[in-house]
Length: 344
Length: 72
Image (tube, rainbow over all chains, first blue to last red; front, side, top):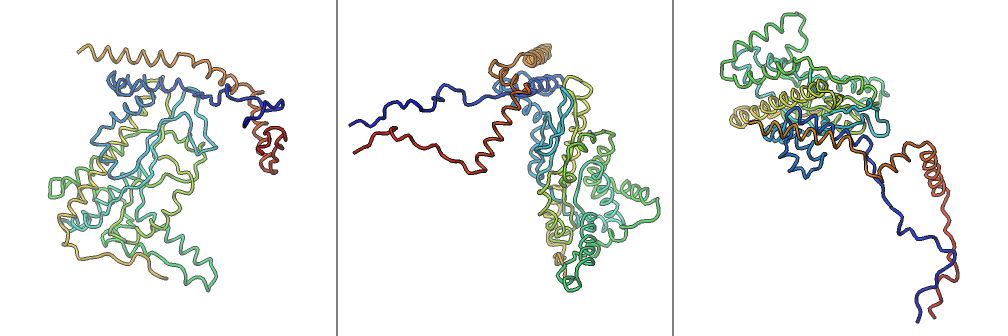
């Protein structure tokens, strides 16, 4: 029995010899230029090249990771989700902002915030000296504002204000359905008292207070705070022009959630707002464009990254120090938190 | 102590050399097409025609009656 048909004269031509795939790396040479720049700056060696299987992308990744270091990398990995990327385009998918010819951009994006429950630490500092907890909180907050986006009482207060505005604009009969977090009431007393300070000398007063207790019981926390402040003040300019041309939908995702108690009003606001944070394309937390051929630009980009990693290293060591201290003092605090959202 | 320094210079030179190397021939063909306005227009036209074809309900080619002999 014959099961095969005879060749049909009008059959489609065979595609068997036609290549089904082509690949082309636009700006592929930039990867090698980046590798050369990393080696010149002491990141990556012949051994790294060997371990990377002579693959330039793997080499660049390993060289940068060697700059971060295993200890710092592990600490960050435990506490926060950062993505470091070097690319020849910027911006959200579909509307990439073109970088100049021969330019690369290094970005750090945050995919998951770290968490600092600072209330118990503030209480302990206030017990040591009145105003010390508040001074610590404000100094840390303003230092972090210079370098990264954080979600704290400020964001929660703004969220509450927006909720109250929506409720006021809504129909009379719908207003009862709104829930307000009552953020200000949920703040520790020392933060409430210092929330709106009129006099301009409070910074000097706080600095004096922190200096006085530098050698006291809480010196490790205050020393870490001082290092964070020093790093945050380094004048390192990022590439804002590229970020503005990148058509991002939102500011960077917060790198740290700062609450006072578990399940407090700030946590509740973050939970509400966090549901929508990933909907748009957020700006990167760090962004700096550079040409791998220009040593000064490479060094500037590396300094920005180094500062960011060093500051985060101090920050998350502080977070773990505070967590450890709280565990050791568990049971001393009788306040179990409060209902996070209250009906209007 | 001089050895690692040499290795670093050699490695830098290797990367610079690789950066200057032309891409493989197949990549060059593709790169030429990507740079050619006519090629890009043609690819765009084909892609649009395919989308239109799918969107308007594709119709299959009829099977030629003598492609397979009857099994009976």
